[in-house]
Length: 392
Image (cartoon, rainbow, N blue to C red; front, side, top):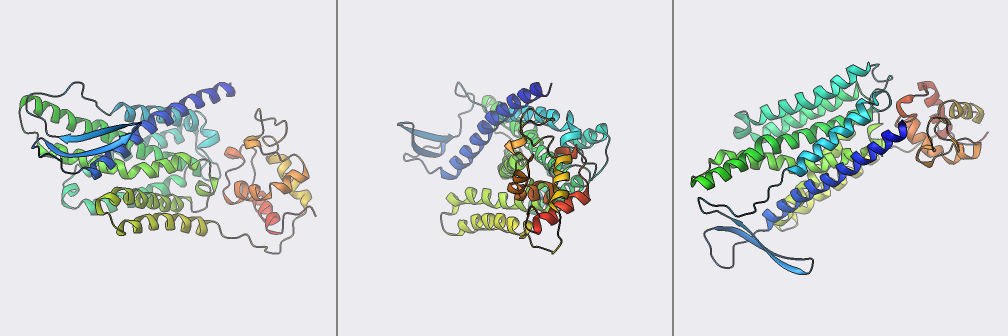
């Protein structure tokens, strides 16, 4: 049965990446395009701006236009299904990985001993209540009177939610639910704000009316939010491969720190063409510097505390807790997890750094702690690594 789940996982993940690239690529392109538009070479009251480009062996002239009342060009291309399919495939993956297999990926008894249904209920509530709170906030008068203050409040609430989820879910599960929440907010912006605004623009143009500017303002604001949320969501999508982030004891702070770094980097790309001078580099420098700072602060050098651990004790722990998945012929999966084999003394010593990272610092392994590694055993493995990871 697991092999079919793996194939389903592969298909959904592949679809998610394909449609996600299409959505994000369109978003990045149109944001770049808007920042690069210039006045037309020949004055035209219908043209708000234009751009010349060369690509794929040809020249392209792109214009942003005001449309004459009563008509629209055919065909008129809309960009919505990329967003919808990205969310649908992502939600399907969330269900398959974290709800169907909650005991493996979502629930960590050492964090909170949840029942399966409780974990799923908390996860779903996070997505839909969180999106509702966001939407209600940005429909309130505060969104127009003090958008900066509301943005700060939103970041604080996101930090509190990240902290809360890390108190009930595994670190990996908490990260994925923050990412799923941000993705749900983004697609809700498309479905409930941006698309209605564009439909109103089309209706007013065909009717020969001036569209209500509030629709354009709301759509522009939500589109800007989606733009800044893109890089944090991409980070969370790949974070499952890096347990030193979600497995850290301060994993929620790591998440918020890298979220802020992502926003700085996204802002650099947003303003680099608008300002066109060295001031933009500070945003990039802060983003990269913040990333390096998080990496250094969360991974202090391993120091020998003088505790000596017999290798025979380490070998017993590895055989009891790890070899079921990490052997030449493992018993809990068809092939060794990530190709790591720990069924010999030489292999254990060779993988000491990985053991420290995966089982001690991040607690990401054993996966879902299915073999029941205890805190005392993790501490003993850490002490062995700190003492030099020898075979004494």
